[in-house]
Length: 439
Image (cartoon, rainbow, N blue to C red; front, side):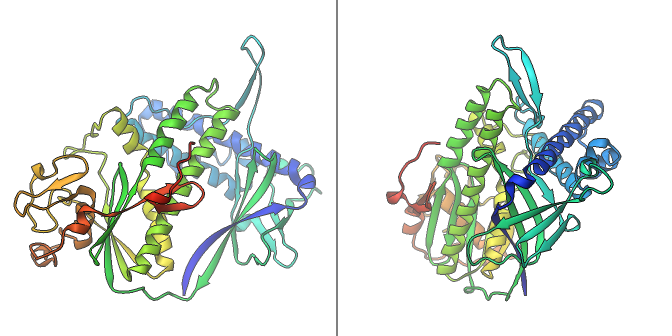
């Protein structure tokens, strides 16, 4: 059996009765975030190091703000903050303008620009199994309150939520509940994370595909059937330029508009990754692929001496907003459900080696999208060449016997891969069918 996790969105039927309790817990999550954020900044200033989740828990578990949520919910807030600081730490190596995670505050100003009021926004609250009691028969879930919100000894120790999912859906094996505030609708909704077990699927076939991740083309995929696909990252890059500019216009980096922009940007990026992974897996099923080789990108931000690479102003923005590790995790999950294994292989020399004859030379990549081999006179798309070398795994110990290198192979498919562009409403579509949409 194969264990999978699925997330379902649910409407809260008794919203009027429990909105106040959810509000208080959402505000408590923001307050704890801010306390932990301040502590992390102080540790950074004093030691030059960032505390991890375990350090934050040890330091703050006795803090009054920690008791505003169930203990596991507080732990999740600290985990999210630690992840955000780690992301910032990676970015600041090449971009000195990178700022640490913001405080979660919403400020109000008078007509003269003076701050007259400040409050905490409603942050997402996560309950894990110890804080949940699920009544599956009646579509109700009890969510444990934080100690600070148990008004008196006889008060209910939980929030009783009645939920409604799409017709025909039965929520079983509930593992986690997230209460998410929708600012546009002015109400809370639930995200229900469930664990399912399915029969372990058989692989669609024995073929291998190779994936080369990049910046201009987010992904190039080569198949053993001598076919290749390109997935340009234009939409991801456009968002990467658009949203920072809009955020720079915000008077308050932790204000309501900035929070909305961050949420929208994150949602669009997540949708891009899921749509791309889904499309690649579907293509692999069509091509009877049982294994995907994906380039192992650890160290891509550093040069041979361990120093941060300088890719230029826009290049650094692209590279350090490039969540390739997150995409790989999504791809692994979706491929696993189809019985396809995902294997990380070395990218060393894959962009400099001709996948037809095996010649390696820095000068053969004559420009961004073109690879020309002086040995066999072949000319083809540079990213597809890298993907094919990853498919062949040219760096394995028995590379001399890798099939394809040095053989009599067609090169037309290397020069003219299929191109799929991202459409906001339909996911990835052939280039001729995509309608351009602005952010």
